[in-house]
Structure formats: C-alpha cells, structure tokens
Length: 91
Image (cartoon, rainbow, N blue to C red; front, side, top):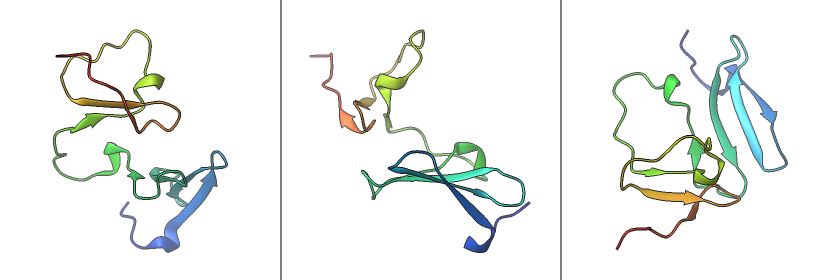
C-alpha cells in the first residue's frame, strides 16, 4: 500500500512530548516527532523505499540494550532526549 497525503494518517501521543503518526488503514508506523527536538523527524527505516544512506551517528545510546556493543567510531548521542552529545572516549 502506498501512503499519499496526510488524510491517511492517524496519530498517537506516546508521551507528553512524543507524537507518533501511523497509517490509519494498516497501522504501520510512519514517523515520530518530539516537541523537545522539533527539527528532527524519526522515520523507521522499514518505510523507506530504496537504498538507505549510511549512518552518520548513534542516537539514544543510553537506551541501547546492555549486551549491544557499538563497534565503530561514529559520534554518539544520549541522555534523556537521546540527542545530547556524548564525549568521545578516544584521544
């Protein structure tokens, strides 16, 4: 199914800051906005058709699974918002 226009979107307020939009026909999560970071829109990679660009950073690092080790040198962000810079552990 192809989603065209806002008429097919419904929304769910996940928290007082987070609003999730989803397809009102099939329930697929389309994108998320957060009132604390209005310039950022969270889009699940599964809704993108075509090739994805390579990652530029890691976000919400403080919320990752304890068993997951980040194995690259990309910048990291965390804290309460998930977007606060984490100082590099390297030189």
